Image (cartoon, rainbow, N blue to C red; front, side, top):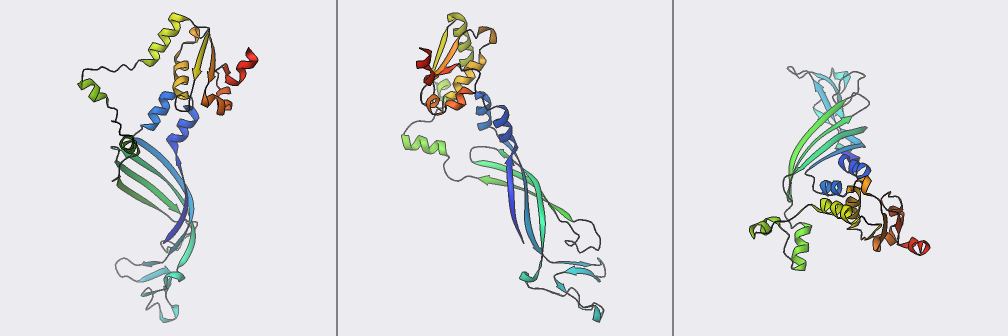
Length: 253
């Protein structure tokens, strides 16, 4: 029996947050990523009993939390164990990793490897000074039986789910070249000022478009306003792609 406190870190999420915090496409990729890799580490208390015998003769060698007396030549050694609350309790260190693969919206495959390390040699009742360790492998499948959050939103709002297949079946060909169109418009119009009214949900899209413009074509100033620029001004200030935001407009005038 073991009680653990484990800390689990999503490696890909750390990478996304550090490297791709300003990249809209990377955020979209992270959201739709199928494969995840997590590392875990922790400490725990391990309660156990263990008995070591000769494999063929079953002759007693050593034990923990079993009753034995040397006075009777170990005749009954290993036949009776202590009550569970009298078992040996030792500290243990936990290290491992977890991978999961999203097969579909409702099915996820899991695989994990966990190692537990002790500072002594009691787990196998071996008489040595080496530290014990054992590794546990597990695999499983997670099946979400309920509706996913997106489907619930669709049902609650009585709105059809967006599907590119339905559009193509009806002869509509979606166009996905938003960055190319934006760059072309900048090069044709050669603006002096670009104004952006951004919400939290559109800020990263705006940043993606500004990042896509070649440096040689960035001959303009950029002004951001709107809800996100008002309440998250400190985030916008840090960006090299935005020159001004709405609180600075009066000073500029």
